[in-house]
Amino acid sequence: MYRQKQRTNRQRQRTYPQMQRTYPQMQRTYRQKQRLITPLVTTAVVALLPLAAACGNEKAGGGEQAGSGSVGTERPVTGVRWNVDSVTVDGRTHRAHGDTHLTFDKKTGKAGGRLGCNHVNAKATVDPEATVDPQATVDPKATVRDGHITLGAPSTTRMMCDASLMDTEKTLLSLFNSTLSYRVDADTLTLTSENGNTLRAVAEK
Image (cartoon, rainbow, N blue to C red; front, top):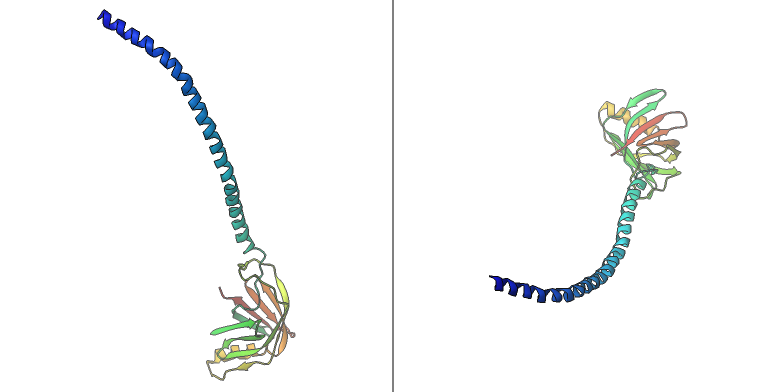
């Protein structure tokens, strides 16, 4: 047992100097790895910074674009189907019956629609007309806008309908062949004739 312990001690004594020689080598290897890893990490971080900035700008730009599409964009008069709600003539308000609507086409310079019973067409000039971005979303709280619409003589079909529909048609026809002032307030269009008769219509959703 004693001799065996002596041999073990001698082996340990021989191993210890080897470990002492190996330890500095391990330290040098570790430092070399650190020198290699540090530039790689720095390069990766530098490369990722522009991507992170671009991502942040894209998010900010997306929110800005969404906001710009809904804020400050006015409802145009042309290119919208205006469903007629009521007409006031000589101080008396008449509710529109049936499929009663009007549209104003800027390209053709015409007004068209249905007067409850018959279809109608007439020349129309809108002044002024708002310039609207086709990609923008109309803001239902947009600022009130005023202008004038000049309607020419109406051309209609010749159908006969119920008395209520014919009354609505007769009332609406009185607004043609004249210049009307218009007022757009959010989704509501109001046309007013020179003698004070008015038409109230709502934009179709």
